[in-house]
Amino acid sequence: MSQSPLAVFLLLLGASGVAAWVSSAPGDRKLAALIWLPALASGLASLLFFFGVYFTNTSPGWVGLWPAAAAATLVFRLGGGRLAVTGAAARDTTIGPTWTHWVLLVAVGLTAHQFWFISYHQPHGSWDAGAVWNMLARHLARSDDVPATLAPMLHGHPDYPLLLPGSLAWLFRTTGEESLVFIHGMALMFSVGLALTLYVVMARFVSRAVAAAACAVLLLTPTVISHGAWQTADIPLAYLTLLVASGLATLSRPGRPMVNPTLVGFCWGCLPWLKHEGAILAAILLGVVVALRLVRARAGFVDTLLRFALGAAIPITAIVLHRRYWAPANDLVEMGILHNLNNLTDRSRWALILEALRSSLTGGDPAFWNATPLRDRERWGVAWMALAAVALVVGRWSNLRRRPEIAYFMVLLPLAFAAWIVVFLMTPIPLQDHLDMAFDRLMLQIYPLAIVASLGLIGREAAPIAPSRPDRRHADPAT
Image 1 (cartoon, rainbow, N blue to C red):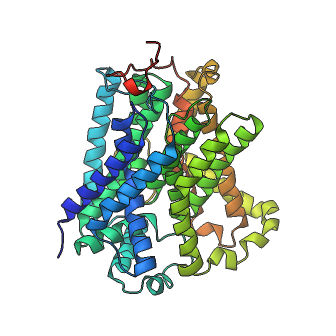
Image 2 (cartoon, rainbow, N blue to C red):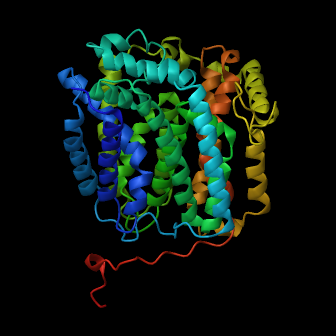
Image 3 (cartoon, helix red, strand yellow):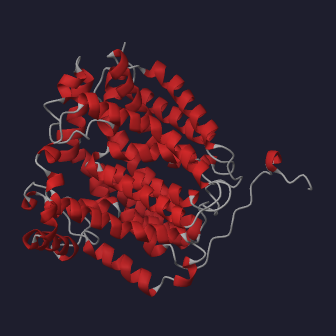
């Protein structure tokens, strides 16, 4: 018997929201239910589909959602340990009546209009969505033999079929209907999650006005709007990268963790489900934090890292099982990417890469000022140049001592670019085929990190919020 698509989608959001709320620190639960919801909703649905098909050759329907959500909540709650009372929202993130919030409301309105306009004219998305994610989800949902269905489709990309297609396939199978409610709902969920996460992350370091301005900058960048409506993987990648980077930066602070390390680990484990870019970004995000902590040891960091690993274990296990038993061999490895070290000094390849980067930054019509983002590809170097100028002119570099997490975001940006340059130098695939587009999309994936790194040093710190109700469980006995 088929279920209502909207009802099942809302049920998935509700179960994920409850899991996020229960697993978060006191004082942060309302925000966490919204910030972590996209990652948990897509992750839980994908895990239900993958493990259901892997072990029983069937996908558990909506009845299996609540037990799975309850089990995940138990793991997050017990694995998270004792968290700081203030939670991750150590700054006042309540929307106040400042003029920047009116700008933010206008930006949200323009974004919603453009999002609807693009979705109306391209309901099944662009190439990544229509020809990969949504098509693959339909094949997975209809197939009686998922591994056999995947084999001919994933020869060159064995990293595709988990997060986005897996969650859509679970929804398709559960309802018996391939509804656009799921497709557009997932796209909107990740876009809203990205904007809200950026606002909350910025509000930890700067005033609410600057946080709202940063969020408006994100929403008024047409490339962000178009790729969100086109349902490409770049917006989920940008969202998960910002979410995990913020979580890891917070976990590196001394003292009791202010975010749930097991929850951060789960979201980090979902990153490699999103193509090779996700695996590269996941390695960089965790590698930088571990390297910094090894250089400057912090008491309790090993315990935090173990709790982090507990959360990452389930999604990483799914990836290992999938690549070991389902996915065919990777074309890039077969073609000898690991044997092309001599390409690192190939001047012709360096020339192609530098030209692609120059074209992405300066060529064509900058998408930052383009009000109709319906072109094949936008050039939006103006946005990056403007962020760099603001950081140099307005940023107070003396704030870096009080906000050391901003340095983490600054380090991530050049590392991401360097990793991509190395990958493109070593790949045996002809670079002329998609190099320009690849750089454009890389800049989109780390664009929120650039906003935090550029605007996170502006002005004074936001005042810590006072809890609305005293938490008696953690009160000082002397009081």
